[in-house]
Each structure stands twice: as structure tokens, then as C-alpha cells.
Amino acid sequence: MNMLSCVLNREITVPLYEQLYDYIKTEIIEGRLEFQTKLPSKRKLAQHLHISGNTVETAYEQLAAEGYLEVKPRKGYYVMDLEDLEYAGVKSDILPIHELKKSYDYHFHPSQIDTEHFPFAQWRKNAKNAMDVANQELLLLGDAQGEYSLRREIATYLYHARGVICEPEQIVVGAGIEILLQQLVLLFERNSVYGVEDPGYHLFQKIIRSYGNPAFPLEVDEDGIKVESIEKNKIDVVYVTPSHHFPYGSVLSINRRTKLLNWASSSKHRFIIEDDYDSEFRYTGKSIPSLQSMDQFEKVIYLGSFSKSLIPSLRISYMVLPKSLMNQYKEKFSFYHSTVSRIDQQILTDFMIQGDFEKHLNKMRKLYRRKLDSVLTLLKPYQDKISIIGERSGLHIVLVVNNGMDETTLIDQAAKESIKIYPMSAYSIEKKIDALPEIILGFAGIPEAKLEDAIQLLIHAWGFSG
Image 1 (cartoon, rainbow, N blue to C red):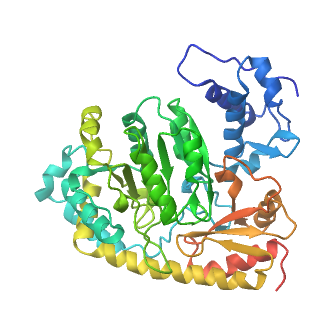
Image 2: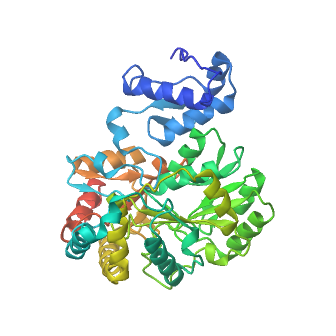
Image 3: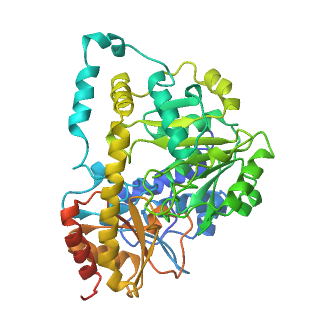
């Protein structure tokens, strides 16, 4: 194709790669860049726009990560079909649930939960109690860090369940992990360099780059993140999911945990953001201790959420800041009000105090284990063609499919059976070349009675008999 006529403004604070990214994305959405259009090479476009090749590469890779572009080995970047964009995204919750089209009978999205078994009666009772004239103060603005009573319950829960050692004064409650991550970016040094797991939760990478900071993808293997890649890229802040990596489910080994903590302790500007993703749902062995529980130098910021343990729409997450950062946090965010409704916080506090949260977790852990066992049993006859990764914990597994189909074909064939599935490439910055396609299969949101039918349809769609 001809060169892109993109006008970049060097006088504004928006990074050049982001301006280029926005331009190409708009061209695709509005139909001016049609399906299968080949984009200019990174070198030629860089010369045409008088920018660096890295700037073009960053924009292209972000578009590919979100599914707007397809990378064809040794050929270049091509525009994806708009119909395929509905499964593209950038994080562990890559597609919001409200974007999942109802035209499919089954959605294997990894962010879904089982909604049938939510404790409606207990929650309704606590909501009624909270909305009482005796609780008039809940109608006013509360503590900026969140209700102290809720933070106290969270601190107690984290100590017993995850080994996290903290005081309620160190906890900040926020309306979703995204809000807390943005606060952290503003809390760190302005020129901080970040590292994120790849594949992984790439919303954080997008947040980082929106503030103009560099974010490097860090390779992950069966022992978790590779610490040597952190040192090589001169990174200041690392974002990790050490107890249950998303999406592979690997656990950061004790050796690498020690190395990571030693790396962070060697400079006052270095920190580790520990996202304890899906920590409540481990099905074999003991619970994996948090990285924060090993931290002796106040270098780990712990993130948690009630999205999977209760409901995503509750929008209550939290972070535990090291004491060394608390004064700095209060100085920078003294004008902030809490982003979570005091009424919702009170309902959750009562839910935890009464022991209902623990009961609900125990019930859901058994339910999700049954669902997982059902999926594994149904897939077992095809283990010579379908390998499974991450079956020890969490609400999803990864399928490595070796039936001759590529990633796009697997998705298309599933769609013909009214099944929506999600590819690993949508969660990856650096694409694997000539590797077997990997599908992330979230099983939690499909009703237990319908799970067998869904798996059988998927197996049939992929051409397996039996």
C-alpha cells in the first residue's frame, strides 16, 4: 500500500507511538484501511514520517496485541477483519463482559465467573441493613483510603489466607485494579521504566504507556518471570503475578522470588507490583504464599480484588503499600476521595465479619474444582492432540492444539458451533512464530449442567471424533 499520511504533533505530551497507534486504529475502524491491507514496513514508514523504527514497531505491536493487525512471519503486518476484532484485547480481563455478543451459545472468556451460586439472600440482607436511618453517615464522603472497618477485615483475611503482613493503615481501597495501577504510576518516579510479564495482563502496559513511560515485555516460562531480563533492560518497577501467572498458571519459583526481591532491594527506586490474581482458587497442594510475605525491605506492593471471589461488578479492589510509601501516597493523593461507594463497602464489611465471605469461597472452590475436573475428563481422550497448561488453579486453562489448524481457523470453526474462544496472541506482546496455537479456555462462567455440551461441541468443531 501507499505510505500512511499520518500527521504527528511533536509539540504535545502524547507519545508519537500512541499518536500513530490512534491514527491507524481509527483508519481500520472507519474502514479506510480494509481487511488484509498490508501496512508499510517499519523501516519505510519510519523514514516517511521521520521517526524512529522503535516508535513504529511499538505502535504496530500494540495494534497486533489488540487484534487490529495480524503478523505474518517474513511478510509483515496486515489489517484484521473487523469481525475478528471482537476477541482482541490487552489484559487478563481482555474483553469486558458487556462486549461479549449474545449471538454465541457459549463464551469461554477467562474473566467470567459463576453467577448462579452468588449468595443473593445474604447480600440482600446486608444491603437492607446498610440502607437504614441508623447509617446516615454512609451518605456522606468517607475515608479517602476506604472504610477503616473494611480495611481491617481485608488485613485480617490477607494475613490468614495469603500470609500478607500489613496494617489497615497500609491498605487503599479502589474501584478496580485499573484505578489503583494509575495511582501507582503517579506515585513512582516520573521517568520510571517498567517491566510486564509477556504474555500477561497488558492493561497495565497500556496504562504505563499512556503516561509516556517505557514498558518492556518480560519472558515467562514454567518457573515464572525470568529475572535476568529485568536486569538487562534496566527496569525500575516490575509487574508480576507470582502465585498464579496469567494466563499460563505457572508459579514463580522460590529461587526466582529470592532473586527478584534481591534485585528490588538493591535500589531505593525499585519496586515490585504483586498482583495476586486468582489466588483463592488453588485445587492441588497448599496455597502458594504471597511474595509480599517474603519481603523484608518494603519493596512489594500487593494488589488484590473481589472480582473473582465475589463479582466483577462490585468494583472493589485494594492495594497494600509498604510503609515507606505511605507518607508519599498521602502527600500526592490528599485531595482524592474514595472511588468506591461507602454503602458497598459497608455491605462487604458485614459480609466478611459474619463469615459469609469465607463460606462463599469454600463453596465456589468446590464448584470450580468440579467444573475443572469435568473439562479435563472430557478432553482426556484427545491428549495426544490437545495439551493442557495451568490446570492446578484458577478459572481457566490453556489448550495447546495440534490438529493442523492455525489460531484463526480454530476460532472460526468454534464460532460455527456458536462458541466463542480466546487466543493467546491477544494477550501477548511478542508473538510466537511457528508455534502451535494456544487457546485460553475460561470454564467458570458456563453453567455446570451445560459444560459437557459446550466442550463436546468445541471438540467437534475442531474435527476430533469420539
